[in-house]
Length: 292
Image 1 (cartoon, rainbow, N blue to C red):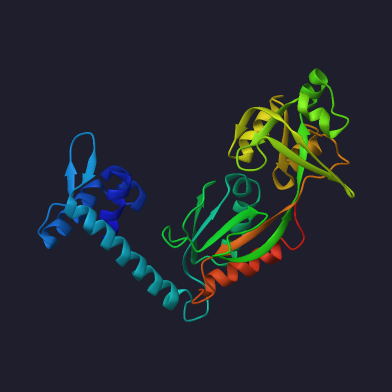
Image 2 (image 1 turned 90 degrees about the vertical axis):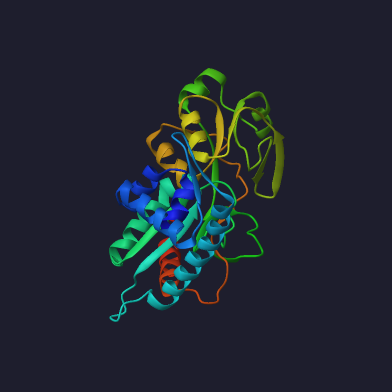
């Protein structure tokens, strides 16, 4: 069922063989045995595509349910060895920029402490249904996390306005927030795309910005800013190394961008596996003093 589900999802026997580390012939054999057992053809194969039959769609839905149930049983009963060591697989999701700049290294350190564990990190900017995607833990940056999920704060997320020295030399340096309106601003598609909010002490303001380039991912905005594309609003966890080397300069340093919070989100406290609990505690400890 696992092999069949992978073929149905990827649409490729070869890709399934690569992912599951088996031969293509073995993948074909497993699917054939499942079809023989059910007495129904599950996949339509051509030289260019693999598609599900009606029976295949029913089988895929039931197979995914049974695989998820099997995985839950394994996680609840086998996440520790007889000696207390953690084992099994954890599935996480986070934004690409945070995974690249911070989380991947932290997870590597965690795995070094628990060598029998495996972690599958889904780097995604979009919202995922944690239950449907079988995600154990989502690391998300937000002002208000999803109220349907359990949220554990990990760290504060501050941001800076930055631009390259070349851009500022060519276009000038903003002196007050409303100077931003005449600059090329690089905006995040999901956070203040056309209006930027700034504060200085008790004073606050908002500026409508022109964004010739926007993206739904902060690393792309970082690269655009470094290429003299304009002024970007970027999280410190990503941009501080470029600021420290001088590749980017802080714009309007006395004005602050509203802070967000980095959360660990999970569906339920009930039956939380020892491995997930251990990772949560580890992340809280690692980000207690923000390393960036």
